[in-house]
Length: 291
Ligand SMILES: [Zn+2]
Image 1 (spheres, protein in one colour):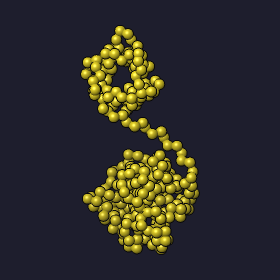
Image 2 (cartoon, helix red, strand yellow):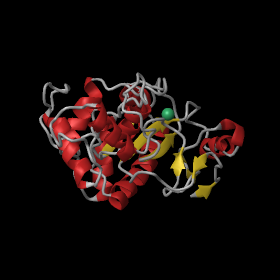
Image 3 (cartoon, rainbow, N blue to C red):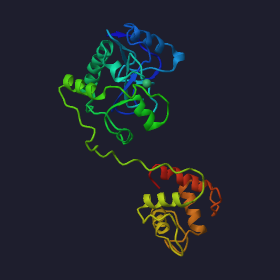
Image 4 (tube, protein in one colour):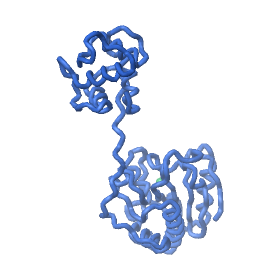
């Protein structure tokens, strides 16, 4: 294996490795020096692109260490391992059968098998939904394009021989291909979408506040007395901040607003202006899952 290291990468990873992304180089597959030529292109900082390895008919070339983040498939860079195959996305099924393609696919299968073993990645071609749900597996750049809509690339093409390729990966890795129809392990529940920190106390902010306080979630502060506001008042009282002479009465009056402003560290005037600095501070906290 040769090595032509690319500066186009982030050092390290912000997410654990979970997906192998297959690309085609969009070059002549019969050129035995093409993995190195692509390495030379990726070595140019102006190119702003890279992959972890490239394979051609006679060799594999390393561009970026696995432990670093290559710039190849926006949306699946942070948790992806990127392999470039000599050839083109426009190849037909017949084209993928020729001797050059078979040599390239064999080299790619060796690399992908090693990755699947090293990073505990099941030998499975993920659907776009599975990819988006955070499943572990193998995809093409096109799947990443469909999942995250951050590029227009369609490689390795509609005729890429997924079944034969995964079967070969499994044979090398000593495992088996996980059928595509297998139910995906449920992904961890997605974090709720962040609130806009806009200073308006609307239904979304109220719902999140209710969620964080553990009170029934309906997106409204009911009157004359709100369970949410009573919970908030009790919390403020517990923190030694008085909420007025009526105590925890569930009413968001001037005294309670003043107490909230004190608690949140914003100017204390007893009013919720629109937009409000105090509500912005509240939204920031709620986005961190706390009050
Ligand atoms: Zn690609």
